[in-house]
Image 1: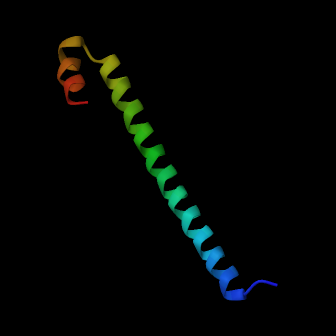
Image 2 (image 1 turned 135 degrees about the horizontal axis):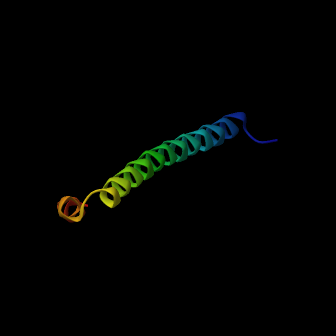
Length: 57
């Protein structure tokens, strides 16, 4: 039987990694929504308005 402290540390490490993955996934989701909104506005905008936006991206 393994040491309970060692098992607990392994559990804490797994939960920390899970939280980090969850945080990164949330950030990527927000970023993808922002990119899609930006692309839609660029596509819908007349070309003279879209050029400066494309240079900034």
